[in-house]
Length: 123
Image 1 (tube, rainbow, N blue to C red):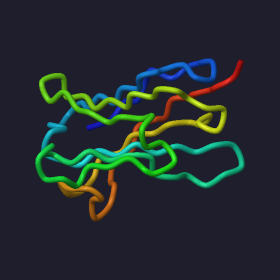
Image 2 (cartoon, rainbow, N blue to C red):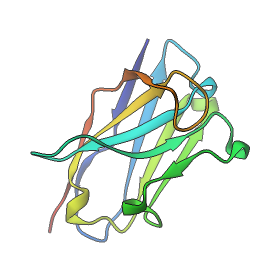
Image 3 (spheres, one colour):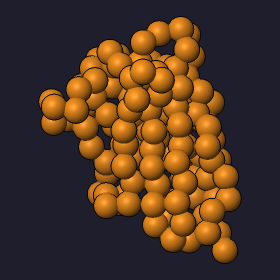
């Protein structure tokens, strides 16, 4: 049972990147999945969460990335995505995905974490 985050890299300010979080050993669609990030010298912060259903209205992105980041899921591929557009240098961080214990956002707790993928925004 694991999550694997990938898709990070070096991107210029104003550019785009899509992160993927793929689950193995369990069915991702039954759970809330969150994206977090941790910049050097800073605490980990939540970025976005997708609930098991698009219709329950609990999915969200935080204000600092609203209008630039979009979270989505492809249940057939057992994968959650974080589309990052118009990125800024302050988006530079290691990005992690995590599985919630419950199906809505925010979940009661996150109990499985991916290994993280580095995103660097620089010209």
